[in-house]
Length: 377
Image (cartoon, rainbow, N blue to C red; front, side, top):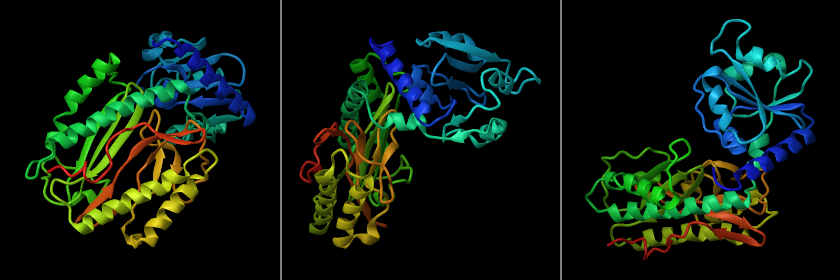
């Protein structure tokens, strides 16, 4: 375990305890693998077997686990108490609900996570659980440790995008970018000392035109590069923390019209950057960006919001979207990625991983964004 991580986990757990108290809950049931990892550093895969951290404003941290996992709980570096249940499913008297009943009283007001599966929420109905995003709220603002880890991930994200672009050729398939994933994994191991398979992943996505107009289409390895705007995305999680770098690039000299759309996409990014700072509404960021793009005549070419939060997950809060009630705070990390799309022709989108600072922002990814650098001829 990294030096200082026990103190980091204690700090996170204490913040959660104070939030539970502030919200007037008696306890919170933490069930998602990411939330458990965030609070304790424990990595596990429950599959269908329920697993719980029971957290109260005061008192012991209680872990309710299936017997198969119980011995591994000893690796959690925080003081805790463990309750085992036999298996899932199990005989009456030996189930996870029986184990939970030992630590949850009939009159306790219980919070559960929004990600809890509906079937599990229904099984807990007699506890009258209330859905409340407690850990998600804590994760919005990053600690210095988390920022350092995201910044490292951003370094490897940039490297992954460079690999994508180096492999791109007119007439070649996008498989060339995918083939560089082992090389990027090796770079992470060399730079970080490990590539934890439980908390790490790499996705090097390439949308060759015209499929760049469909940013949520899964690219096929047989897609072939031709003329038009292509989009490359390096989207990864390195030992627990994520980053993304995305660029629109050309494998030929773009036309005047293509260059103009590219410039408008960059200008839309700058509309966002011009107002990023603590205290600004996420709604306002997206509204200003979308209003600009609509005023430029691209109202019919918009598919998505300006950005989203990045942390342990590649997509989390805050959400930079019209209608969002999130407010930017210092040490939040977000993406900035407005896009312009033309069905059957291609799309234009850059994305960077961006830290909100005391007086504005700082890009954690550092990849060229100008048209000349991204015209690969």
